Amino acid sequence: MSSESSREKFQAYLTQQGLHVTNQRLAIFDAALAQKEHFTAEQLLDRARTIDDSVSRATVYRTLPLMTESQILREVDIGSGEKFYLPASSGNTQVAQVVCVDCDRIFEISAPFMEWYGSTVSLKLGLKPISQRLQVSAHCIAYRSSGRCPNRLKK
Amino acid sequence: MSSESSREKFQAYLTQQGLHVTNQRLAIFDAALAQKEHFTAEQLLDRARTIDDSVSRATVYRTLPLMTESQILREVDIGSGEKFYLPASSGNTQVAQVVCVDCDRIFEISAPFMEWYGSTVSLKLGLKPISQRLQVSAHCIAYRSSGRCPNRLKK
DNA sequence: CTGCCTGCAAACTCTTTGCACGAAT
DNA sequence: ATTCGTGCAAAGAGTTTGCAGGCAG
Image (tube, rainbow over all chains, first blue to last red; front, side, top):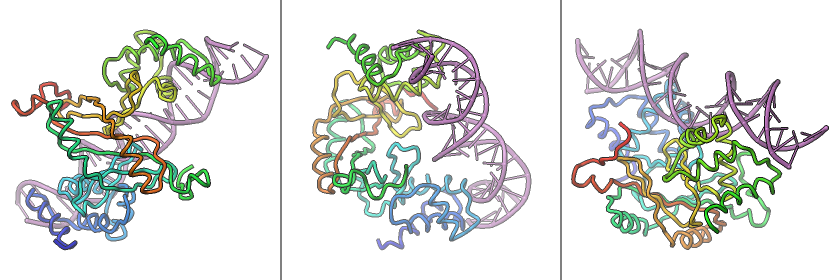
């Protein structure tokens, strides 16, 4: 249950699926868990290469699905062209994302009622809910006073 | 307030923005409002060309933002690579999407509490909410009995 | 050994953009 | 007359894939 078991969990998943435990996959795994915020495939590639410089972009893209399927990572799509990832550490799947439209930072907040909502509404339609996501776009704190976010990254 | 006024609304928006009312834009508008379900840019292009075969893909992509800005269409991004659009007829912005993972169909359902939630949570973070979206992935009705959705479109 | 994995580069999908001509105001 | 709009084709961004050689089990 400690954080190290996450690595074992990943290895177990690979083995159980008849997949090989390679240095590249482990480097990508370690790079992913070292991230402090949401990260992109490209950022993961950069970081993984500092651990094992033989890691290629293709392998990163091929490994990401393995890590999401094994519940190591959670995928976050905010509709911006590229996907973001985050260690699924807390096991909390009932979370919403608040995205600052100025600095593009992503905040995660718990939204415990989401599960209830998904069940309620989906059952009304006769559907069987699998997952759900709630995202809020917003302006940053500083926006109100300065008119724009101090952390803006683009434009 | 009848449905015809929507066309006038679009023309008014164009004029007011100093933009020209062209046959292509009107064809795209008509094609969009003729859609019964969520549609993609490509589907819109096909349909618009049945009205005016001079319509190009580029113009469709250039016109879509005009129609969303003028509240004619609502954009729906379910994280599938391509964006979907829907006439923003009912003026109801507090809606969630339920996406069937088997047939990819998108159902829209009202979710009146979304606004409250966005405000509550965003204000706790000191942010100023702009918009929000709630999406539920689910299996179709028929999935439970047959094991898969009869409307599956892909694979 | 056998089959899965890898890096590379090319391919793909959806969308955006530069350009020179054409049309709306 | 201007200014904006258009189609075309090329460019972009992010991601996926075919291939021939390489490594884990």
